[in-house]
Image (cartoon, rainbow, N blue to C red; front, side, top):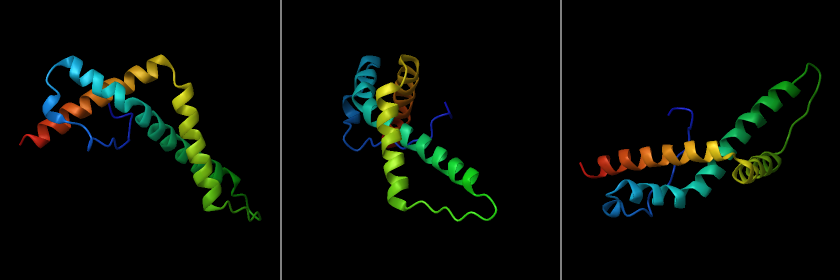
Length: 109
């Protein structure tokens, strides 16, 4: 699924304990909240850039501060985590399982 462009941190995952489908799903559920925030932050960053481009009108000199941008992106991430639909959560969980399998196969080489 290429719709998600997030880097999920698997450093705390014990890949040796992931054997069954249930093991992968359980680990994905643990990683899901942080992945939702990261996905929301990516959406927030894209939205921020679009808003800034739309505000660039000839003759205007609006310049948002980096702290405003960071605050907007962080808030968008937290909001997305709270308001994501069940379908979105399930799709992201499935994506995490897929990424765990890929990561595990790469580590075992």
